[in-house]
Image (tube, rainbow, N blue to C red):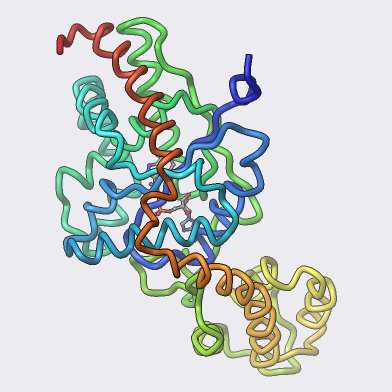
Length: 325
Ligand code: TYM
């Protein structure tokens, strides 16, 4: 038995629906890198999912290439990466799952409702998003799925679908588990809501120093003056300090609680810490980007590995449900 056969399988995906941000990084991407040796890792760019919100084809291609570069720049091994669209079996499996679950069941998905409330068109694809995600996860026999809190329900839907399939057709699918770190489960954006590509409130992961300053200085806070006591638990600037200012955190907490720091100074400290954090990532990304034309070659091994797994699994699924090719 080879080493990789002993390891549990980690799978996760990111939509190329905009510029990746520090919420994506702390909520999910960082763990892909931290766990890539311990698990057999499969990380993909979910470009079919992104079609539910991106309708400009050039933009989708650019975002997809950028997302690959971003993952390489944070230290993910290229052989773990692939594109969702390189695995057509995933959309095939999603169709089979569509015949298993009901409209009332899927209507309970909160992400769908939130996106429609935010103005996204209520397409069938958007409604069916969790089913495609279940296919991504189950086709690879994933054991753990590192994601942010907003994706917890989607992983639960994948578990339900696996159980339903197994009950009907026999035990074919592994039941996956979401892997969510409480401290970073929901990173706030500069307006205090969840940081999200679609809310226009992000700090991009590879921002320029200038943008970091502009974005951080515009974080919305309450109107307390410098000498008033402040609540670190509810302040967005402090929430971001938790990610970037680890060494100063206890001192900052005391200064907040004792009314010894104004929001302006707190933001200035945060700007410096984010700059220090992002600079080396940005440099690495710039170096990798020089070879941008070959970016799809770089992930060739990841693609082939994922295709092999998916093809073998789909063969079993077709047999189980009675589809002949
Ligand atoms: P996406 O691109 O919306 O988000 C990618 C990952 O980033 C996490 N995330 C956050 N975590 C903490 N705080 C935030 N503010 C924040 N914003 C985003 C998300 O939870 C996610 O882990 N549907 C997935 C993509 C996907 C997928 C999959 C994931 C498609 N198929 C299969 C896992 C397994 C998504 O939300 O992408």
